[in-house]
Amino acid sequence: MNYRLYNGQCCLNSKGYCKKQDEKLNSYNWLCDIPEAELSTDYVEVQFKNTRKGFYLNSNKISLEKGDIVAVESTPGHDIGTVTMTGRLVYLQIKKQRIRQDAEIKRVYRIAKTNDIEKYEQAKAREHETMIQSRKIAEKLGLQMKIGDVEYQGDGNKAIFYYIADERVDFRQLIKDLAEAFKVRIEMKQIGARQEAGRIGGIGPCGRELCCSGWMTNFISVSTGSARIQDISLNPQKLAGQCAKLKCCLNYEVDSYMEAQKKIPSKEIHLETKDNVYYHFKTDVFKNQMQYSTDKHMAANLVTISSERAFEVINMNKRGQKPESLNIKEKETPKQEYNDILNENINRFDSLKKKKKKKKNPVQDNGGQVKKEIKVIRRNNDKQEK
Image 1: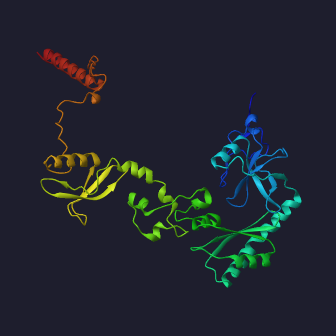
Image 2: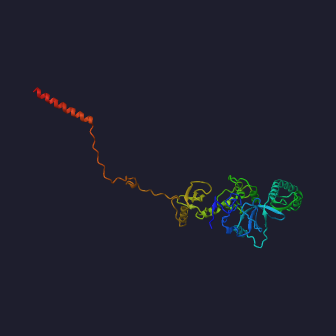
Image 3: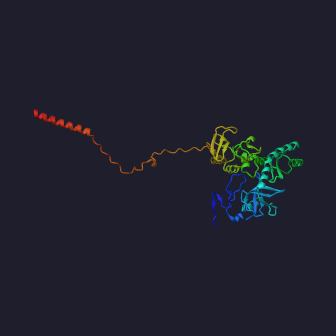
């Protein structure tokens, strides 16, 4: 069987959602043009607001593609989401998430109708107002918490409140007040400062969109050791992001620095020469260069050498030897007395050109002939006189 691609989209997906997108949590189904992989499982992956995803069983054998808006089972009622993956890759994602095979997986009801989408849009329009009112209610109760986001279910019968709190909060009375105010089922979910920044979004000091809101899905702990390894100044204002936590990007290049530092001697070792003792001042890890100073606390008589030269001096000091200086003196190359062969003319061995004879000037020749004629006339005149 021949499989053809049209404009980078597989021929099995007429909507063109198989191509790569720049949206967060987007997954590229690289098996979408293989029918055997597309029909290998009845499970589909559905994404809801922000980063919430779930796996659902397509028990009704509905023909679903990536990008379809579907109504799925929820407790209570139903929810509205977008299909983000179908086929064999869904089964691999379930294994990656370590979901048990005996776990109860909810079902896909149908492709969302016009009435379902209208209810979903109405519920979504209430989210911002609900968040502001819920903050006022929490403030009246004196709770040390911040409600960062509200997400309504697709049918509008349930609302999820995402909150941040440093300590444990007793929000039993808050749930009663929220249920009475909004007439919906209430669910409270605690998130961290990084998750809140990812949900709200923003621009980082680098001028680009925040990594947590742009592409990051998992948050790895960041420590000040990452800054020390990269020789970054431990300034809390510069190391902290908009979430008031250490920036996630501090972990991006740590492995490269640790690998490069294996080829560099310890900073605590000082180098001894016949003239001075040199102490470590600064290191350029990726250029493989080290800078030493004769003063332990300030820059004085700075000398820059390679790590190979530093290892060489260290080994000499261990043997009780001291070099004259840290820098290697370059040997003076003798001047070449002969010409470089590359500068020679390529035709130097050819036969020498014959010297061309100088052509006589016709004006000068005429002048000589006139003088000869005058001499002949004078001789003839002398003979006649005799």
